[in-house]
Image 1 (spheres, one colour):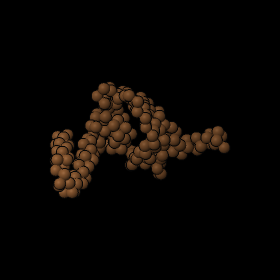
Image 2 (cartoon, helix red, strand yellow):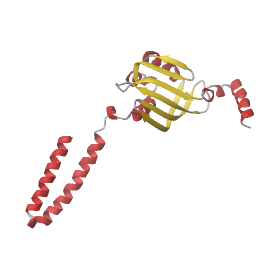
Image 3 (cartoon, rainbow, N blue to C red):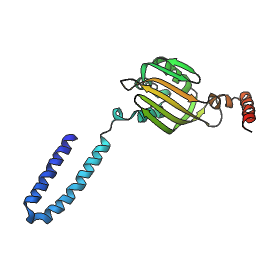
Length: 196
């Protein structure tokens, strides 16, 4: 692609010097010039859009893409996203190592009927990524209606671009306890006392 742009630049500079030397053919050259510019623009902007590949995605884009595509059939992508000695922490517990994390995700996604992520905000600093999200979840044993939980993730990447640390922050009660009939009643009563 760079060679194409270099040769087009060379052609354009040659065209402009030719135009300066041959003032008599100026009207013809202007028409040709106005045809060359849009072609260069299309090649430039079209080339810019087509040059990005999966490896060139930002950490934020790669992370969103990973979670958007994660399901029982795509668990092999866990090895591509996380380092082999990853440390994962969430309100449910702590998991160390990519193989254990893959088992953890498998057990979590086993009952998932549908999951959708809404990304609210993100911040990247050095090797760290902070992502704020809203999860829309339908699960077999959880609730008959969609469960919506807001949370955030702190992810630290290693020198190879793989996640070596991942911590999720969310309200476990909003995800689980408030959807178990007896616990739901108790939790709602407690919340009502603090928020009348």
